[in-house]
Length: 289
Image (spheres, rainbow, N blue to C red):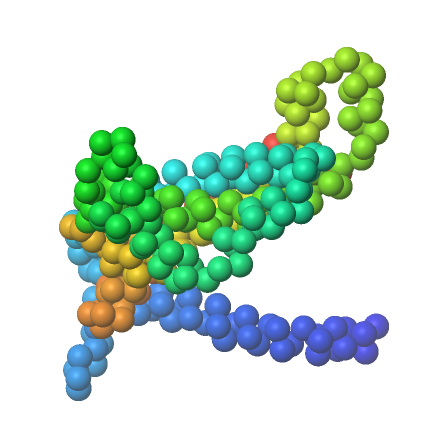
């Protein structure tokens, strides 16, 4: 038994070392750094306790980033999940060219986010962009989609949904194809409508997959920042500044490690609370086969 235990530990040791080195230790180091000032030149960091967090409470850019991220998450999460489920239901039926449709839905997922952002930059370009060209015959004038505070964040949301929906579709499609076909046959014999079968049978059986997709969608809502860097750099007037982009700016543009560490701790706490809500509350309502 001891030999088997040693072999098991030897097998997981490389992955465990990488996990500690690149996940747990940076998290602990970030937490420690959030209680110190930013070292500058020969001046070492100074312990300030919770002062960084109290300063964050009065930081208007932080609250703007939190507000933007809340809107971004509230929009991208349900839209991408519902759209992914609708696409999965569509390509799970016998339709002409089903393989091509599946490939078309999944293509945005294979593109790097930097490439996606550059593609959508062309769509949003004033005068010459795709959207302005489409709206011009209907009386639509020149519009700076990424330079207007009213449309910049919705533009970022549209890019994220277009990129993520095809990825989430794969999980729903796999779950739909794993369902026993005799359930559909029994429902047809009972005279059940398609909507009633979806609501009473399909949707409950998809709940474990939906929870998995929801967790990934929540993480992506606070993780995706590439398109912000390429398309708007947080502008105009911080209208597209998300929490992770603010961390990036504080840490790598202004070299304010104290602020970046404090923001990272806040982000980790926020993600922890959301994870508890998803697994602690929603997970109890899901039945696994």
